[in-house]
Amino acid sequence: MLRTIPLSLAVFFATLFSTVHAEDQAWKDESAKVNANAVTILSGNPNGTDLFLASDISYVIDNGDAMRVMPIVGKGGAHNIRDLIFMRNMDMAIVRSDALEAYGNDPILGDLKDQLRYITRLHNEEMHVLTRKDITSFDQLRGATVNTSHIGSGTQLTSKLVFKRLEIDFKEVNMSQRDGFEALKAGKVDATIIVAGKPARAWSDLEIDTGKFHFVPVPWPESLQDFYLPTTISHEDYPNLIAKGKSVETIAAGALLVTYNWDKSTPRRQRIANFVEHFFSRFDQFRNPARHKKWQEVNIAAQIPGWQRFEPATEWLEKNLKPAGGGARAGNAHDDEIQKQFNAFLTTNSLGKNLSEAERKALFDQFTDWRNANTKLTTTN
Figure 1 (cartoon, rainbow, N blue to C red):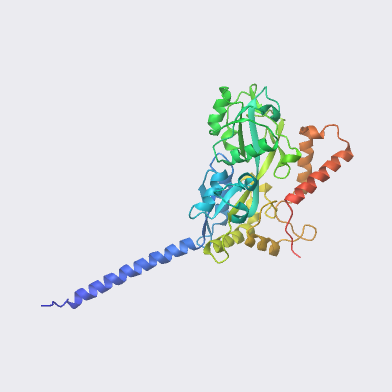
Figure 2: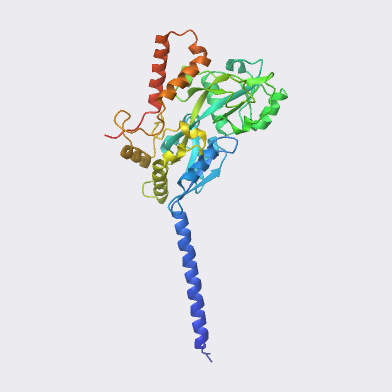
């Protein structure tokens, strides 16, 4: 015999099911809203500079549900490239400008030139080479035992490429920066290297006997000039490592913000295009003194040889920027500063000694021609 469910009980269950369904739908709606414009940036670890710039990006352009940026602590170097290509939910990563050269033939990663697109060039990352005081030139590291940081790190990537291009063979070991410094003091390694935006946090508070250890200069011959810029590290960067009024010649690689080459129809591409709009249109805010000082080096319109730019970034630049000679210029407007830095570089560099005024001008013209080729502004008609 079938029993009839009382009307009151039927109403109760109907109301319960309706409430559960409504709550489930509200949860789905909230989830969709939160994820619609959220993007991730894979950075390096706190020893470098990348994480701080990624954090600044998040702070400046987060705009509720209209734009969310979530920095992720990564390992840098090859790890960031691998994670961007293979790991779920990685939208962008900060990598070094020499990555295509270093990993362009990796059989697992595949054709990086086809898979990756850069959004903008970020800051410079200087090469720091700490050695015993009796080693006075980079060439003396030939056959030496050198710590190039962790395997797959950005420091290892750049260090091996620089040694290769300078045709200097060395014995590589891999350990953390702190361990490398202790190994140097114990005589277990001849040098330890970090490539990071100055001042590198890992070394900024080291207590070191400057009578026994120092930074060795890094040369800038023609074999390095396609990827690296000449620069210096000074007492102002490392008051505990470099004497007051002194500086050391070195080179710098560029850090790039890159993304995967998503198909135009994918939601991932649309979210990153939305990010580009928020990032570029708010770039003035990154000049604020509250932001990391490395933002002063950033030129969002700089072109990177060998790399293709993310198409929405190119479109934004073409729409919003004007030629340097006919209107506003984006990124750095530091022409006088470039001349000042070049003069300071010559003062501390052996290239600048005993040069006539004409020779100095010719060298500066060569430098600016090279620099313009690597930081050419995108213009509008």
